[in-house]
Amino acid sequence: VKNRWLFGVGAALGAVAVGATVAKSAKRAALQERLARLRESPVQGRNIVVVGGGFGGIHTVARLLELLPPESGWRITLVDQRNFFLFTPLLYHAATGLVDPSHILFPTRALSTAPHFFFREATVTGVDFERKAVLLDDGELPYDYLVMALGSTTNFFNQDQALRHSLTLKSSGEAVVLRNRIIDAFERADIATNAEERKRCLTFAVVGGGATGVELVGAIRGLVHGTLARQYPHIGSHEARVMLFENSERLLGGLPEDLAVHAENRLRELGVELRLKCAAANVTETELTTRTGEVIPTRTVVWAAGVRPVPLTEKLDVPRGRTGRIVVDSFMEIEGRPGCYALGDMAACPDVATGKPLPPNAAVAVRQGKALAEIILARLENREPTPFHFDFPGELVSLGRHEAVARIGGVKLTGFPAWVMWRSYYLTQLMGFKNQIGVALDWSFAYFYQRDTVRLDLPPAVADGGAVVSEVPREPSPTPPIPSALPPSATPASS
Ligand SMILES: Cc1cc2nc3c(=O)[nH]c(=O)nc-3n(C[C@H](O)[C@H](O)[C@H](O)COP(=O)(O)OP(=O)(O)OC[C@H]3O[C@@H](n4cnc5c(N)ncnc54)[C@H](O)[C@@H]3O)c2cc1C
Image (cartoon, rainbow, N blue to C red; front, side, top):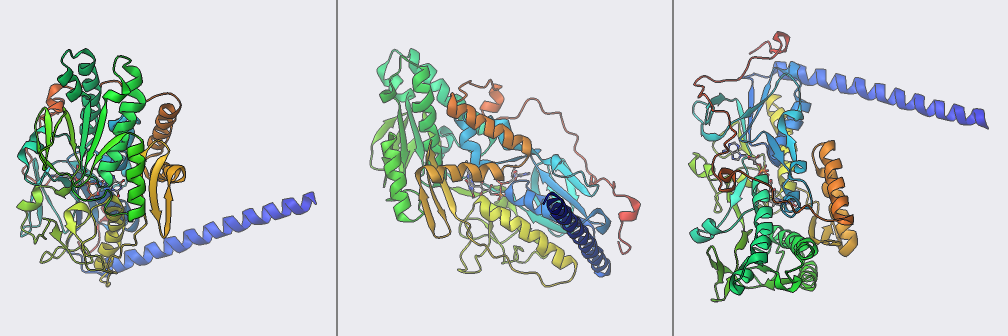
């Protein structure tokens, strides 16, 4: 029996080894074929430039690096103003002491050490489509193929006061600022002698009842009622108000009504004050006024009511849709700009099933990035590419500890199972093993003990949204600074 077992195990291992060798040779043969096709194709240049290293950009680059090895002769350059990728779905957790902010950041240069991959930390200031050059704050970059994935910014719908006095949550710095603000509000309230001021400090308002606003208000509630109320024994838990303002009749417009109603009920039970059909009309340093005229004294208003493409989009000579997003076709190519593509939040890419623009979210951007790399490869090989088709994978919205709502395919989940699914899914999606371990440990610590409530010491310039003082002064570089670091053998014959 023992020999039969040993024989079985040996045969299985042998089969695996043979399978792996066959797969490896098939991969090598496919690569040789691809390289041969690339050599035959009329190569006009050698630079693929991807601007924006968020969800869309980083996945485009990762897939391009798989499809185009160094021997292909193509350089792949990623440009971003920050040298890290930010995992936005866990920003609320960074803003409310559940995870360390550095655990949701992934260093962009760690993406690849391939000799034909270049990262450039710079701010894109424009694109000269005639000269085929990306304009940067410290020079410019020539391109043959351009991919634009610069994302979006908060939409204040022309409410200047709200822009001046609300907090937003789009970056890791803003997450730290929000966390500091909430903790500081408790510190101020603890010593306030004026009852009105104490009330103002202890009222936290979120504007916008989409997925971002709902997840954020749930996370703030957890920090305020779950941790801070215990750490400040002179402040009663009932004194702290956490409020959510939504313009329409219901929360979570993208989810089925029964899930939205469940979310509303659970948030109310958890102590969140919901104001539906209640738009914010004005925000000042000390209060929020609704369109119905109600005045809420508060020092903390977080604006999560919508997004619009980054302001640079308006400066580009490209067609834009109703919401300001760049109009692209189902290959993500910009209308009238051959070889230039846009994806993610800044692009209005039609859903092939409905013809309507796909929503601005990470799930769309990631799938677009991977598909766009295939489209570019097809173009390089003179093949007809496949249009981008988005299969809706489902939606997960966290409401707080043990509470979430989810729709996966036709299945709807609520409560603990949805919460476990939310955490498991996002843990697996995080980039970098170190980050996954870090977040898992942070969550465990917060679950069994308590959240981190240290007010992080920021230099005032950062807190005010000004320039970061630790920056090394930059020399403007007039010449295109792509290093010619490719090995000589990697240069294609025709270039
Ligand atoms: C708090 C929060 C939570 C979210 N949660 C979810 C979620 O749970 N699920 C989901 O699907 N989506 C979620 N989203 C939305 C998701 O983050 C975006 O849809 C997604 O990031 C869009 O990808 P993108 O590639 O278009 O842009 P981004 O990921 O925003 O990347 C844009 C990149 O461009 C860079 N950039 C911008 N301007 C310049 C410039 N001028 N020069 C150089 N670089 C520049 C930025 O630094 C950034 O790295 C969330 C968003 C936020 C803010």
